[in-house]
Image 1 (cartoon, one colour):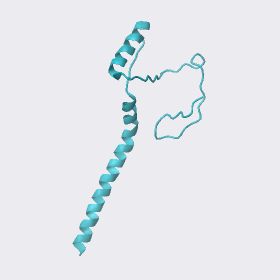
Image 2 (spheres, helix red, strand yellow):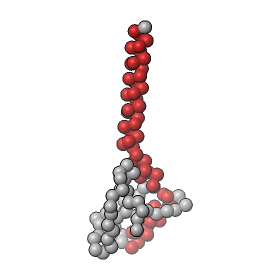
Image 3 (spheres, rainbow, N blue to C red):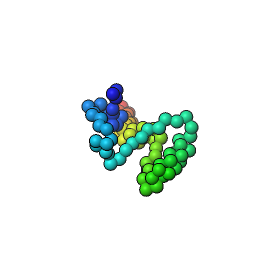
Image 4 (cartoon, rainbow, N blue to C red):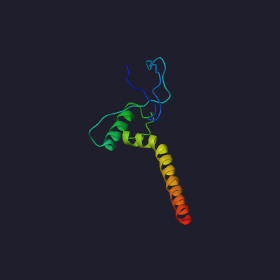
Length: 102
């Protein structure tokens, strides 16, 4: 059972059904690995282990959870920054107009 199966941080939780990998093999698999060591060294060890088992198996897009979170929040962060910039600009224009009218 999974308590929370969000695909992205900004979406609602969707109903999910989990199948055995033998019944429905995905084209892309995602693994999360928890470590207290340096993630770069673990990535190299993981890459070596996978290539030892199957040298033709691709292993790409190795990222830390911080990088995944940063990527998923980059669009809302840009929207918030632009909204704040335009709100500040509107405030300056309004203050100039009020000051000029006095």
